[in-house]
Amino acid sequence: MPPASSSRNHGRRLKGSPSAPRRLLFLVTEDWYFWSHRVGLARAARDAGWEVHVATRVGEHGDRIRAEGFTLHPLNWRRSGKNPLRELAAIADIYRLYRDVAPHMVHQVAMKPVLYGSIAGRLAGVPAIVNAMAGMGSIFSARRLSTRLLRPFIVAAFRFLLDRPNQWLVVQNEDDAALFRDRRLVPVSHIRLIPGSGVCAETFQPTPPPPEPPVVATVVARLLWDKGIGETVEAARLLRAEKVPVRVRLVGAPDPENPNSIPPEVIAAWKAEGIVEVMGPRRDIPKVWAESHIAVLASYREGLPRSLLEAAACGRPLVTTDAPGCRELVSDEGIGLRVPAGNAPALADAIRLLVHDPDRRRKMGDEARRRIETVYGDGPIFAAFLRLYEEVAPGSA
View 1 (tube, one colour):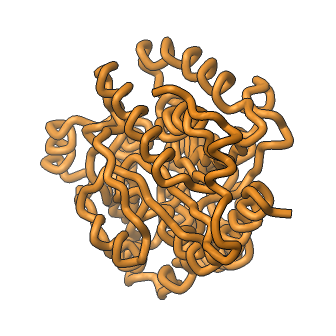
View 2 (cartoon, one colour; view 1 turned 180 degrees about the vertical axis):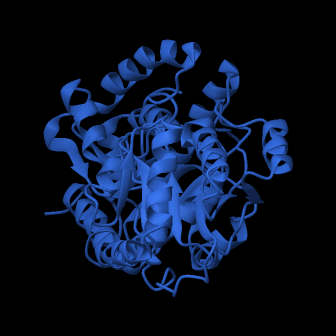
């Protein structure tokens, strides 16, 4: 993979008709993640005149992505790949893609695309790269020894790859911004804080709460240990022992590609125990929140938790942890309650408090909806990204 001449590549990229659209390429690990988290931004970029390309591993969303008018580039990689030769081959594939598509700008989302894409982008001479870290993932929240040992190498890779004049970093909360800033991984002038990836306030609408009792407290998340699922189940046990009139529901599936995925046999045991309702994955998330009174996420670390943003848009109060990303969203008790991460009794206390106070739930839900409309909705978020694109793209003023 010999590095192409940067000046030659930049000249080739910017050559052509002045009216030809600029090319924006999204690099994402999985098509489901692009569809759930970035398709709205891609539509906004398309409507603003960009020619949008999407590079990802294609599962069941390929036809949907193509139907949007985006050019889809399937990649043969996995989030949890560990074979060194295959990982080098993945970097080579991205390099060839960047060289052939010649994007004016690349938007790389999450840790693996940021690291691999930054190597490929440097070799291919990509003029501008936006790196979006939607949370720091299990690398910075997992307690396993093997993961902690890997952490210094990831930090060194960030420092080596991201400290470049043509790269910008987008984070979703101040904790992540401080991590990159304080360790001097990225120049401060190249760090942007954009709170989330946008929630459609028209799709996620407030609805009246369902009849009670019981009160329904719902978690929408991948079934991972670091999403606080274990603590949520323990909190449900405590509430059941106290005969609190609440049903705790888990909506989501395990993620075998993630080292923190909860084993199927553990989930089966919870289901058999009957302490929580294990609902499995659902696509009708607005209906899930219409069936719920409280949204819960006891995560150890997030970027800005999308499931809580969507619940807030539906006018539901939030119970979460005093952890990066979660504390950013629930910064006060206006829209929800915060508890220490990893503390099941405190989580049970917060849920119990809201179960017994429907008026407080209503006030929190109303304020949560207002904040989505003014701060976290797709309108302000997409506008912030489009402003960044115009700021850093080649040829911009």
